[in-house]
Image (cartoon, rainbow over all chains, first blue to last red; front, side, top):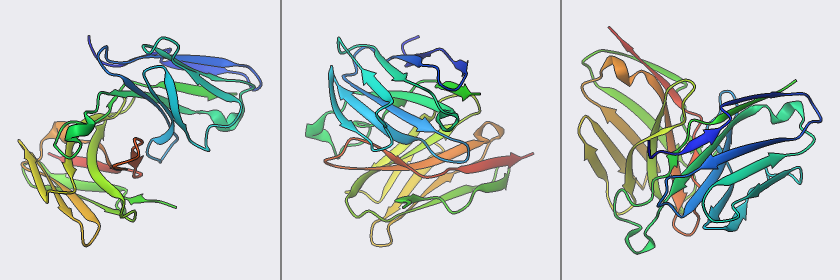
Length: 121
Length: 112
C-alpha cells in the first residue's frame, strides 16, 4: 500500500493528557499537511511542511499543538493538555507539486490519509 | 468567514440520472479548485480538479465547470451510481498559498 497512513486510527484520552499522532506520507511526496475536521465542517488547515521545514501554521494551531517532520519523511502532531474542544478527526495529506506546471491539471492535489479520530473525555 | 461555500447540505438523485453539486467562492485569489469525495471513517479522496485558466475539465463520469465571473463551480456526475453516495467537498487554493480551503460538504444520496 503506497498511500498516506496515519496512526492511531482512534484515540480516546482524558482531558489534560498529552497525545501524539503519526503520519507517513506517500514516499516520493515532499509536502505534508495536517488538517482538522469537526462534525459538519470541511477539513481545516493546521500546518504544512516542505521536506523538514515547517512553512506555515494556522492560527487554529494554538501553543498546545506542535508538529514535527524531523527527517522530511514521517510527521508527528502532538497536542499537550488536551481539551474537549480538541475532539476531532485529524487528517494528514501529502503532495508533490510541480510549481512550473502549477496551472496544469493533476499537479497539485493533496492525497489524504484515513485520519485519526480523537475523543477527549 | 466561509471562503468556499456549499449551500446544499444534502442532495438526493435517482440512480442513472445526473447529479449536480454546486460551490461558490469569495476569494478572487483562488486559482485552483478541487473536488474531494469522502466516505464515513475514511479520509477525503481526490476526485477531479480545474485550474483558473480553464472552464471545464472532464474525467470519465465526472465533469467540473468553472465560472470565474460568477465565482461558481459545479461538479456533474453522469450517470449517477450507488457507489457515488458520499460527502463531496469543494475546495480551492491560491497560487502563492499551499493550503486548501474546503467547503462544508454536500451529502449525496443516490436512490435506487
